[in-house]
Amino acid sequence: MSTIADVAARAGVSKATASRALSGRGYVSEDTRARVEGAARDLSYVAHSSATSLATGRTQTVGVVMPPVDRWFFAELLAGIQDSLFALDYDLALYGVPEGSQTRERMFESVLPGRRFDGIIAVGIQPSAHELERLQRTARPLVSVGPYSEGSSAVSIDDTAAARIATEHLIELGHSHIAFVGGSTDAAELSFGDARRLDGYHGAMHAAGLSDHARVAGSAPTMPGGYTATAGLLGDRRNRPTAIVGVCDEAAIGAIIAARRLGIAVPTELSVVGIDDHEHADMFALTTIGQSPREQGHEAVRLLVRRMEQPEAPLEHVAAASALVVRNSTAPPR
View 1 (tube, rainbow, N blue to C red):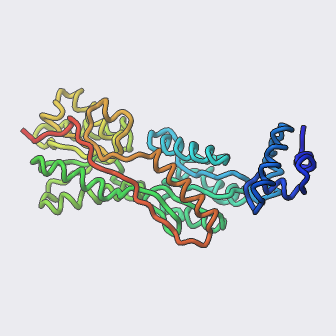
View 2 (cartoon, one colour):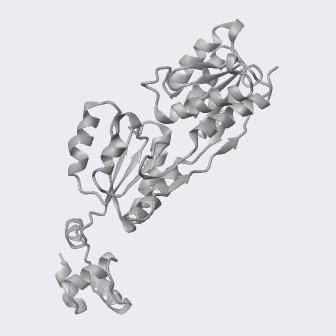
View 3 (cartoon, rainbow, N blue to C red):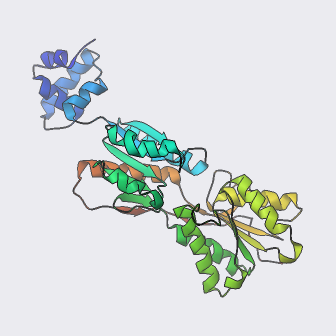
């Protein structure tokens, strides 16, 4: 197997010059770079990651900290991060650990500080455990994805505005009895992003003079969670809402399934709107606030590369695109 010394000898340069030419870090003339790359091709040389790390001080690895990827948003986001990192010849070390677990605490206490990463992307970090601040103390370039981004470059949608727009859409259609499904009624268990969406719902209801009609059915932000919460709301014929805002599309789709099971027609008897534009949203004709987590993953990598190359540059906060997507799950109340 050829070594960097073999490549350097064949190209007639020093090992340090050959390393700079192949890594792209440090100045090398175009003629020398072409000569070294040609020698590497001739010798079928493949750089060993450990050797590259020793030569450049970089590991070509990015750590990604996020919740378990069993939900659509996180899976799509991870796909975008991975696509962009692989295109730049970076490896990815994934830590998908549930919040509040002993494993997660050990990860922040001893695992992450002991790993060598060129940078870290933190997804969906909650402020309560001060995890983002703990990542900052590792002194590595850091980018967060999600509404909590204290002290880091970040990419996110405006969760408060998303829920407000979704609620206003129903109000403009003529609904007043609008319920919010998803998240948690326990403030200690409500995620930071879901809390902002709940704030957006309450803000829209208050602005329209409908605060007395506001109802929140707490549940897990999942299809089963939305189904169970909605079944409870719709079980009382006298106090049924005419419309529902789901904290996310999964909860909203669960609401549609619950309505169908109870013989309640969507949208003629119940309008439903979600947030995210989940891959199944179109199949359920769900009106939603669309966003692209995959594109947010690409944007997070772009921000991180900039932080790695310009560590003293000002922090950047990118507002990801989101907009109302009207389908057939919403209509004026009859």
